[in-house]
Every structure is written in structure tokens, then in C-alpha cells.
Image (cartoon, rainbow, N blue to C red):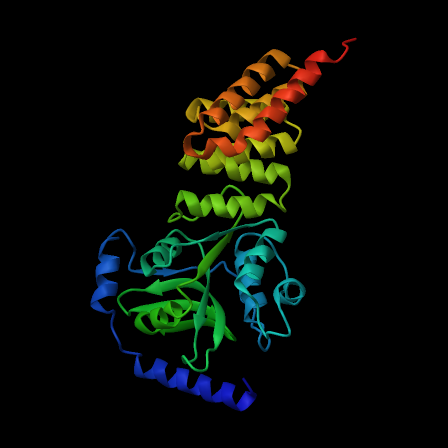
Length: 327
């Protein structure tokens, strides 16, 4: 989009905002929010820093705001090296998530609903979101950070562009947000998750975080996830793997032991337990776990058979350790 078209699109958006300035929530929006009567009428978060965006660099500015609110001070100019794509004149969502992780923060998507967004704000957490401020034929993608709301006035409060506190009618905001599929995420310190998060969302966030995080930070994240979802197989395996990576083999054995107690038909649980006991030199426990891994994989239940090769390889490793000369 050239500068003239961009100014025209922004002018159309501004006109729409003014026209909707007195608009109230739609019946659907009211029904959505009526399910959360505990929400305070007004919320304004003061702690998120404000970074006026440079041209086309709303992504770095929004990410710097979210990271700053979580305790990580980093300039948008620094973030632009990681998340801004000059050829696209913007930042892709995947880069925004990855940029959070590279700075030691867990990036968790929130549910695509106005109710979830307001719940997070009421809990004191800012939310990075993507809007389309343009038209269907001329999209104008824009990242902003929600920092509050005013329900009596039907307004959302944003750090947006060059505005430290932009008040936008909720009905207008929700239309512009809906054009992005209501995409939004939060950047939080390890061990903290959105109040509205569900187990699959936290698992996805932690898997992405673990790839670049310090093992100790991954351990903290998985541990806190298990406080909320103690029966989560994925979080349990993640905790065991992170403990193993941190060098805490006994902790890893305990974590994998808890996994197989809760999920006795989990081949990866038994495989990891066997290999951890082998590393600890407890070959008796390692053999028992490896044999169980093969038996469970052989049963073929719930896709278990695809783990057969790994289970047999684990058993061979244990047998090799048993056959090795001992001092």
C-alpha cells in the first residue's frame, strides 16, 4: 500500500471510529460478558511501558510493551532485528511468538473471545493482539496491546501506534479484531499462564518455549502447568525431559514415574523412565520399565504400536548396560 492509500485507509478507519463512538455492545457481546459477572466494570493497567511505533513497526513496539510489563526491558529497535520483516513491512504472528521466547518469556495464545481478553485484563495482564484496521480489499494489519477496558462506556483501552492510551468502542474493536481471527497472546514469565488458558494452549506454549529456554525455566513452566492440570501427559513428559536436560536425573525419574502411574499405557513414559534409570545405573528398574514399554507398545492401543521401535531400542540399551563389564 502506498502512502496515499495508507492515509486514505486510516482516514476511513478514523471516520468509522467517530461514527461508532457512542455505539453500545451488541446483544451477542452482552450475552458473552454476562457469563462473567465477576468482571470489574473498569480496569486500567498502568505498568505496561509505552513505545511509540516507528512506521510499519507496530509489532516490535507491541512486543516491547508486553515484555516490559513482564519484567524484560528491551527496546523496539532491538526487537525489530528479530521480528520485523522489511519485505513485508511488518511482523508475522509466528515471529512475535518466537520473539517472546527468545527473551525468556512464555508466549501463550488466548482464546479468541472478548470474554477471555477481558478476563486477562481483569487479572492484571496486558494482551498483545492483531487487528485489521483496513477494509477487506485493503487490509491494514496492526498490533496493539490491550491494557484495560471501561464496560459502562463500552470501550477497550489500548497502547496503539503513537497513542499511549487509545480508547476504542468495544463494538468497533471487536470488528477489527475479528478480521484477524481474534488472534492474541500473552508474554509471561516462566510458571505464569493466562487465567483463561486451557491445557492444549499451555502445552503448545511450553513446547515452543522449551526449545529455546534454559532447562531450569522449562522445569518451572512445566511444574506450574501440572499444578493446574496434574493429569496432563504432555506436561508430565515435558517436566521429565526438562529435568533430565538440567542434569537432575533423579528428579526426571520421579517425574516419569508419576507419568506412568497416571498413564500406564503411555509408551514414551515407560521408555523415558527406562533410559533415565539406565543413566542412573539402576539397571533393575531400567529393565522393568523397558519391558513394560515393549509390552505397552505391543498392545497397539491408542497408537502405542508406533512406539515399538523406540521401546525395543530402549530395552536393547538396558541389556547392553547389563552385559557390560562392571568394575
